[in-house]
Amino acid sequence: MASPLPLSAETPDPGFAELIAARPALSLHAQDGLLVEEVPLARIAEVVGTPTWVYSAGTLRRRARALKRALAEAGLRASIHYAVKANSNLAVLHVLAAEGLGADVVSEGELRAARAAGIPASAIVFSGVGKTERELRLALAEDIAQINLESVEEAEMLSALAASLGRTARVALRVNPDVDARTHAKITTGRSENKFGIGIDQAPALYARLAIMPGLAPVGLATHIGSQITSGMAAYRAAYARLAELAQELLARGLPVLHIDCGGGLGIPYRDEPAPLPEALAGAIKSTIGPLGLPVMLEPGRWIAGPAGVLLASVVLQKQTPSRRFLVLDAAMNDLIRPAMYEAWHGILPVSAAAAASPLSPADVVGPVCETGDTFTRGRALPSLHPGALVALLDAGGYGAVMSSTYNMRPLAAEVMVDGARFAVVRDRQSQEALLAGQRLPPWESD
Ligand SMILES: Cc1ncc(COP(=O)(O)O)c(C=O)c1O
Ligand SMILES: N[C@@H](CCCC[NH3+])C(=O)O
Image 1 (cartoon, rainbow, N blue to C red):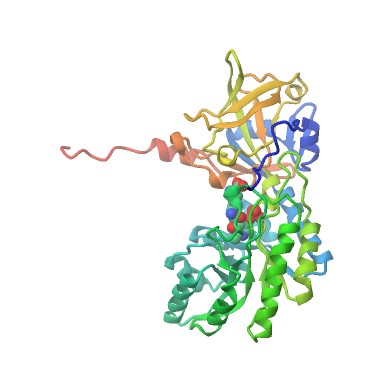
Image 2: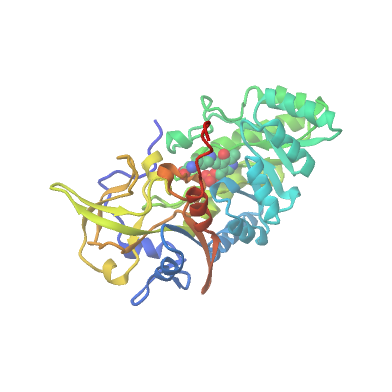
C-alpha cells in the first residue's frame, strides 16, 4: 500500500517560525508581515487582489543551481530537463531557461511554451503515454532532442510518421522497472500495474527492434518511478540499478545507448517530511549508473518549482458552528486542488505579523466551492482572522496553478513573479474575468 502524502494527523503542526525558516524566500517583517523576497505579500494583494499565485525568481534560481551543483560535485555528466507540467508559466520558464535548464514536456502546449521561453529544441524531451500524431509531428518538425517512447504501438506510430516525413526521431525507451516508490498511489508510476513505460522484460527485444525500424534512432533508456518521493533513495537505487543492467546488456549486444534519462520525482517537505537532498539523488545515480560512464538526464519538476510559490488568499469570513471554526477563503479547490485530490498538506500562514503572533486555536480552512472536499485543512492551529485578512498557502509553486480550473465559474487566479524588490503580474485575472463576463447567449432559433 502506498503511503499518503501527508504525515499522520497526530503529528503536531510545525510552527510559523519553522515553516518560514525552511523556505528561504519567505520572511516575516514586524511591520510588513510576510514577505516573498523583499516584497510584502500585502502589497501584492493591494495591487493585484486575491487569490493570486506568487512566485520567487530567486528561489527558482537557487534550486536550479543547487541541483546542478550536486550533480557536478558527484562527477556526473548531467543535463537537467525541467518538467514543465509542474509550472508552465512563461515567466517561470524564462527564469529556468536563463539558468540553462532544458525541458521535459508532455503536450503540444508545453512544447510551445518551452520554445517560447527560449529553451532550445535541442534541450527538449517529450514524455507521456499518449502523444498524439499532431504532437509527434510538431516534435519532429522542431527536431527536439528526444522522444521517450512508452509502448511498441507508439514506436510503430512514430516510425511510420517519421519515415513518411523523411525524418529520423531520436528516441529513448521508457522502462517500467516495477519498483515501489512508496509515494501516494495516485502518483506512483514505476509499478508493473501502472500505465507507464514498457516492462523491463520486454525492453531488450523492443530496443533491438527500434534500432532497425525506419525513421527511429534509439539513443538511450528512460524511467520515472513516481512523484513526491520522500522515502529515501532505495526505490531510486533499485530502479537505476535495473536500468544500468539493461543498458549493459544492450551495449554488449552492440546496440547504441548514449545516455540514461533518470526522470524526476524528488520530493519536498510540505510539512516536516525528511527532505531528500539533490546530493542523495546524485549519489544514487553515481553508484548505479555511474560505472557505465554515460551522461545522464534528469526531469525534476516539483523540487524546483514547489517551494518557489505561494497561493495568496483573503479570508472571506470566519464562521463558527457549534462544533467547529471555519475560515472561508476566497481561494478554493479550483485554484489549489492538491488537498482535495491527494489529501495533501500545505503550510498556511497569516500574512500579518500581528496575526501570526496571536493565540492559536483549531480551524478548518475551506474555500467557497459547493463541495465538502473544498477543504484545505481541518483542525489547523491558526489565529482568529477577520474578513479581508490575508493568508499564504505555502509550497504551491508546483502543481498549483497548472492544475487549477474554472469550476463554479471562478476565474483563474492571477500569477505574480517576485524578483528581489520588484514584482510583475505574469498572468492577469482581468482578462479571465472579461472572458467569463463577456459570454453571451447565442441567438435563439426564433430571433
Ligand atoms: C515523465 C515524468 N518526468 C518528470 C516528472 C516530474 O516529476 P516531479 O515533479 O515529481 O519531479 C513527471 C511527473 O511525475 C513525469 O511523469
Ligand atoms: N500533480 C501531482 C503530481 C503528479 C506528477 C506528474 N506526474 C501533485 O500535485 O502532487
